[in-house]
Length: 548
Image (cartoon, rainbow, N blue to C red):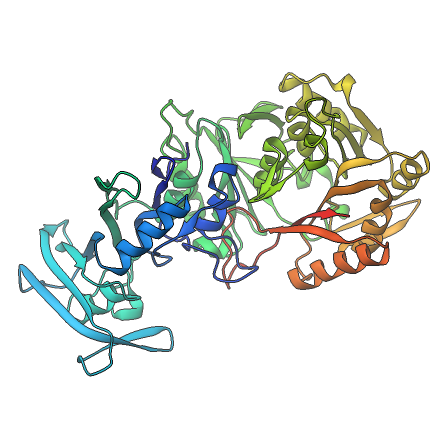
């Protein structure tokens, strides 16, 4: 169970939304909201429905319907005002009254909403406030309960500002800057849609917690995963700096040596087990490594490209991390890459579970042959350390891993063994991807799924330079003869200059030119611990396509 899940039964899923995550996707390529991420994560959540929302920077209780009965009931209860909502907010302004009510109509002007006197035809907005605790901390903060009697956008925020007590962190409405918007949906009371019994859901507020690690702890189950991104550049307030948790270690990356401020931030993570909560004890972080990012990887010696110890005790030559219960071997001494790209975690999980997205099973053709299923086959090109292959093999597929590095394929074999898989039952091919795609097609090989995750730039003696921006269509064309009808093509790129729309258009044109068609498609952005903002645009673009 994900840490953010408060309650689940046949009809309801109740979640404690972290601050900094939209309730739903704000735009097609702007990253998933909580609803999208949940709906595509588990088959039993495929029919989730949104019945209310919280602002991106507001945390707290959100309820989703799982059945038509729940959706009808919840929609009716919210529309009729039968759902009781209690919020908590912090303000650093003096609160003159113990209890007060604000009633007005709200008018949108740009990104803000303005409070106006009630007049004919205007929708009524009413919020009741009550002081819960005064004199919090040396700053003299006040904790206030807010009960919205109506459900208008930004209602509590506007009414708090109207009353002279803007919410701490709500700079849009005159609040003092703070690490987060200090508004939390603490309680939701409703009637259960099936039983009619009262149901009350609570989530405690923790305004003192750093909202960036808190977002990760809400969405990562440490019993299953101890490798994820902690700081994602400008999206987390640190432009150009990236920090990953890798089991017992941190990996810091930037184009410059660590600053004093960055070093202090890394030290704050060391020896802390609360970065990912779990019912089981979580190993503490014991060391931090720093890697200098360079745009000239091919011209950099391996020893210079490898991360170097910055804080704590040295890591062993090889160490293990856990991702979705799967174990992977990592190393800080193998050059510029440590053995796993964390931004592909959700995609590896799709292979592990056989669930691409809501209504999109991975190996549908193999499943259709039950009770005598044909063992599905997966081709993983540019396999590196075979992370995709390991997950597919654990799901019951026979895999073929293709890479230009013998060392990486040997690393991949060790990952197979780590997870109780026999490497001898799978194929590992050393060589150029384009060359082997042609040779496999000539042999008549066909696969239920093909993974294409090439480097943005590469060069081989046989086929020269490959640039994702201009050559991806050629790669897809070479792979399609190996994909069975109704097979799934997984395509991915980190090319920063390639827009998502252009990437998808390239794929569609290559598939159409091959005389085939896209039957089903799911675009998968990078996971929530790699947040997408204007300051930190998306780097990872991935698509899953069932091709007829």
